[in-house]
Image 1: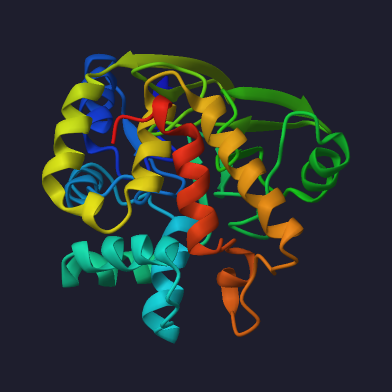
Image 2: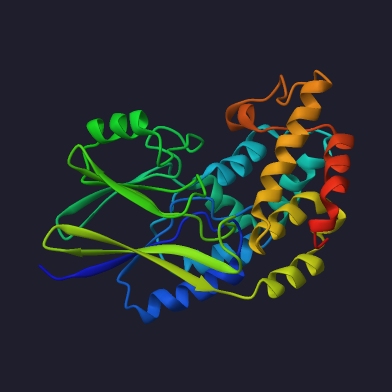
Length: 296
């Protein structure tokens, strides 16, 4: 059997600048096929650019929770007034009609086979785009490897650095986070799977890109007029201040608890039952607390 290489590029989150460099690196490494396990778009507002790159590269695409937000928004047409929710509306409206249609038609999982090795591709888990499988979640890993029909389970969503384990005779691979990883400064993470003689080897790749290009594109696209808070948090993660994003949401959540306000809308359906919405003044006040760390 021939040896083939699969590039798995997960959690792009609209970072078309980083994706361009990753695709160049994959091409230099003579990758045969490309797989994109969801969260292609959102947190950065370059959805069309990202989707054009992805569509021109592969048909092996699935939805993540970020695509599910767009799908559910188009289905239910929520009219929530929270400042934070305007970010979703901006992201949706930024997409062309063709790309909106693509996002709303993506499958939740893929079953693939290459050179006699079968793969289950998911975003969060085989059961949910929202569920997270962390490296330390031994019971969850045991559950999915025991029931997995395929040889390999590949997923993303957690934004943990790349890790993989062999459990119950199966290979489980967290493909990392390419677009907005809080663990690397100005670096994009993806993996190449090397397949030969029905064996799979995992190679982690870290590719540099220019975050200052991302910064200038953010400034020009208009999203800062809609919500500079999430853009500031996202850009902080790209430039080495990922822990600030975590602290921000811990503080905001604690402020909501002190106020006895519910984080979730009672009229939410689908994936929006898991979408945390903060009161506007808490959203802004928490931003002001950390603004010295922010670019915008």
